[in-house]
Amino acid sequence: MLSTFPILWLTFRQFAAGRATRVVAFFAATPLVFALVYLFNSGDVTANVFLAGVFNQFLAPTIVPLATLILATGTLGNELSDRTIVYLVIKPVSTWRIVIEKFVGTFVVTGIAFIIGVFLTWLLVAMGPEMPKSSALPALLISSLIGVAAYGAVFLFVSLVIPRALLVGVIYILLWESLLARFIPGIRVLSIRHFIQSIFVHLLNDSSVTLPQATQLTSAVIVLVIVVIVSIILAALRLRQMNLD
Amino acid sequence: MKSNSRDQRGLDLKLDGAPVPISARSTEQTNGSSEDRLPVTTVEVDHLSKWYGDVVAVADVSFAIGPGVTGLLGPNGAGKSSILKVLSGLLKPSSGAVRVFGVPVRADTQLYRRIGVVPEQETVYPFLTGREYVRWNAALQHLPDRDAATERAIQMADLGDAANRRIGGYSKGMRQRIKVAAALVHDPDVLILDEPLTGTDPVQRVHLIKLIHDLGASGKTVFVSSHVLYEIERIAERIIVIVDGKLAAVGDFHAIREKIDEHARTIRVKATDNRALASLLIGAPQVTAIRFDTEHDALIIEADDVRAVYRMVPRLARDRGIRLIEIAALDDSLASVFAYVTKR
Image 1: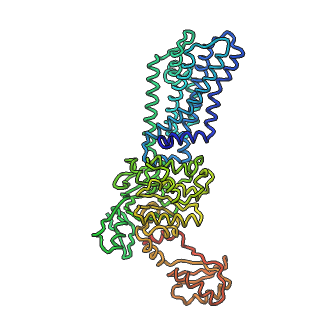
Image 2: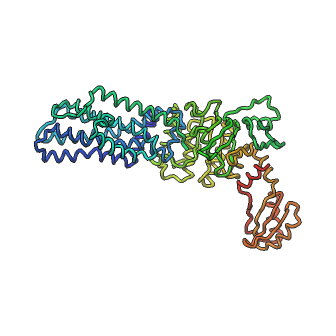
């Protein structure tokens, strides 16, 4: 990998050496606590409704964005703060490649953490009194990964624009994605969370699980793909224009 | 456009016009003719200015350099790093242009296949070993035989077994050397070195100076900055002096050095018998004034030819059985030297 994707290789080494990856793994494992509680005391809540609740109320608005924020703002943000970014930009490598490989590194590491966390959560729920629908696991995994991609691209761009991107990102997640977008209908459609939840609900395809003002599956996917592409373009342009003093 | 004032020893002062090809001038001086060897300009700085808000770091600086070692000299805060960062493509010029091989540096990243940069900042990825870091640089340079290039660069930087250790455990001098190895891995034609000797121990310093010399002698353009006059003296024959963001002098180091030596300078000499030593020095033609420094229990000697005084004082002291405790140049700081050069 070092020879083919040197920036991606470096990104993995950075994540492996830092504490941030462990924090992300911790975040990705938090749904397991709810699954354990459900396993021992499911009450009359169906497995699908429980998993939908975990995703819509916990993973999508808070855990996925927070975990992604940590690595996405660190992957280039830390290089800016300790000025090692200099070693990347004085090479015959385009800013597109730098940003894309950094994005992919963030997506892969955060994504793997959520694949493991979500799968184990599903497994614990499946060990309970009722088996979830077959669509539950793909819905959880795909929606989480799309969320990681969307938030990852946005926060990576933000880290090149705002010096305290982590703090700003936490405020944005807690204030906008978790609070305002949940209760104010007009804001809802302006949040990444809404589109992730829409994708999840459509993929789950369970009439007992609904989402107010849910966006069509195709539309939600297109919106999030555009978010990713635009964020990466803006990040590459920003990096190209930056003065690295 | 002002014309350049130039004396017979190859010293240009107060250059405000078009880029001055140092390499071209040196070629003419060395060979006596410029017709058989065309001047080669690899790096060109054209009316470069760089400011940060209201602070002007570099003010309308123009010069051009070619193969060989050229030193960029100036006191701390003079604007050296700003010039090198613009040259490296890390900063955008506020006005003017910088070109390497005729190409604006920030216009094409492929230019970095021909440029090696040792930046000023110290932090290098601490979780990588030195060898991994150099090999990573080789991969970014798309080199065909990355292992061979890595080993060659590590050998050139004289890192030896330290290359297998994590950079996080390196001394400052070793970090400088691993940065040099990384900059050399693709065998660049132009090297930009920002204070490469900072933090190096004497042995490392000697090795790096020799390496820089050899690279310059092999036809590469080496542009190296320092705020230490004696460091530059050992590295570069040609220098560019920057003071307060402006070009103060350009030319052959020895010519500038001679100019500096013409300037009366002050030396403090501390000996076991200051009065006896003073009586010996009073008649010396190179000495213009002597006074006693009661605070330091020393002599303050003002001299026209400071080098002659440096040679004379130990000889006189030895002949009279006086033991010298200290000889220190009081106004030999780079700032005072630059102040003198700038006033010219």
